[in-house]
Image (cartoon, rainbow, N blue to C red; front, side, top):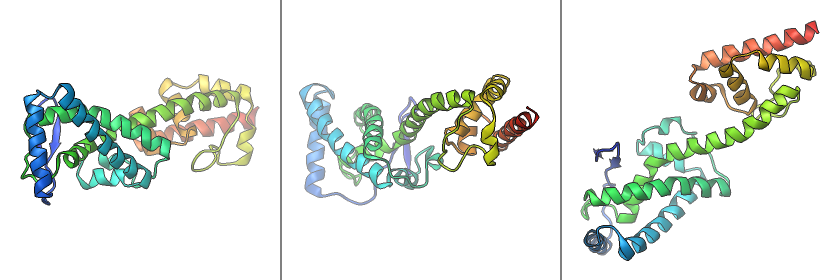
Length: 245
């Protein structure tokens, strides 16, 4: 999909090829003229912003709940979309939060886009549809912000449990491959955790929080193989220390 650069790293997707209703497009042209006359401020802008935000929220929130949001990003070639989950339906609360995190910065960017006269009535998309297209560029940042927030909450719990030698279920199985490994004493586990570098400790916390090795590598700045090696060495050391105790 062709894009334009407006400076300040603002990337703009070209509107879809299909033509909208001529009357709607004419009305949008009048709306844009009114916004330009008001310098995108005051009551005219506030009314437009509220209506456009409301429409965008309904679309983005619905896509998030139905598991279509990330696919829409990939379909439009949004930068960073290949790192998003293939398909994931978000809980209603998650969908609400990510929609807000997407649309607040998107509205500010959209104001600059309109000011640069990027939207054209013969471009194929209505103003509100064009807004949704631009909002998709903010999806990756909003998603990873949510993931990091969830990770921070999880990690605080998992590291505490790690230090105390207690365990909990991960999303894809237990942290330990053998049942007897759970018998490691709290003292041994505390010694092991405090004896590893900060990066390794973070890798362990992320692993116990349920993140897969590729995701851990992305957050820790390591390759997937390096993450696997660090975890294998740590868990092997833990098993050796337990057997020797």
